[in-house]
Image (cartoon, rainbow, N blue to C red; front, top):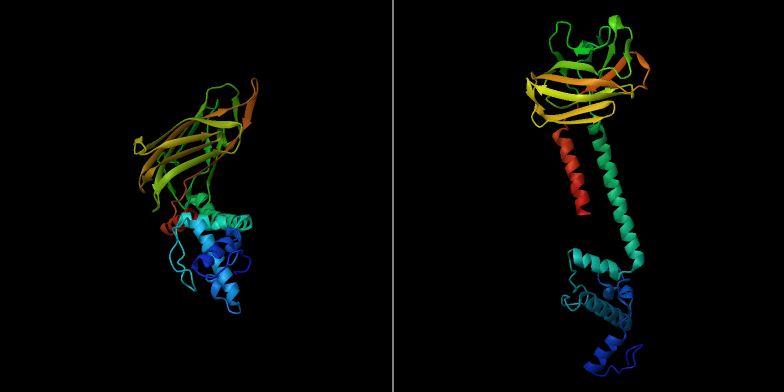
Length: 302
C-alpha cells in the first residue's frame, strides 16, 4: 500500500488511486524550489515517489491538463508567458506573493530614482553663455510707463544659450537707476524686448520670472522674425511666464511683448525696483535621451 493511502498499489489502478489521494495543496507542491526536486541526492525511493506525485498533481491542478509531458528527472518543461508566471506566483502562496510584490516595488522605485537623477539636471539645464556682455539695468520715466529691453544702440540683444550657464538677471528701475512709483490700480506697465539668438545652440523656449511675487505678467506675445513662433504655447503662473516653441536657429530675431501688473491694495503705491530673471533652457543630448528611454523600457517590462 502506498504510504498514507487506503488503496492498494498492486497494479496500475491501485498506483493511480494512491497518486490521486496523496496530493497535497499546490502551495505545498511548489514549496520545493529546485527545478527537479525528484532528483535530489539522498532521498529514498518512497520520498522521490511522493514528491513526484505532489509535483504531478499540483501541476495538473494548476494548468488544468495543459502541462507538458515528462515529469521525471529534468523532464518537465517550464511554461512561460505572463499567465503562467501569474499562475505560479499564486500557487506559491501569500508569503511568496508579498515577497515578489516587494521586490518589484523596489525595482520600480530604483528605476524612478535613476531616471530622476538623470532627468533632474536636464529639467534645470538653463542659462546664458554670454552673461558678461548682457545689459542688466533698464529705466522708465516719470510717471512709470514701462521698459524697452534693447542694447544701448536700440538693436536686438544677442543672447547665447548655455545649458550650464547662469540666468540673465536684470533690474527694472526708475530714472538713473532709482526707484519708480506705481499706484495700485494704474494701467499695466508694458515691457518690450528685442533679442537675437546668438551662439550655436537653437532655442525651444524662453522663461521670465519676476522676483517680487506681488507682480504678475499679462498679455504675453512672442514673435520670431516678426511672425508668431511656430508651435508656440504660453504659460503664465503668477510672477512667471514661459514660452515654448519649435526650435529656432541662431540669428533669429525674437520680439517679446507683455505687461506687468502690481497686485497692491487699493490706495497704496509701489516704490522700488523690480528684479527679473530670464533664460532659455537646453535641449537634452541624444545620449541622455537614450538613457531616459532605457529607463522607460525597464519600467514597461516590470
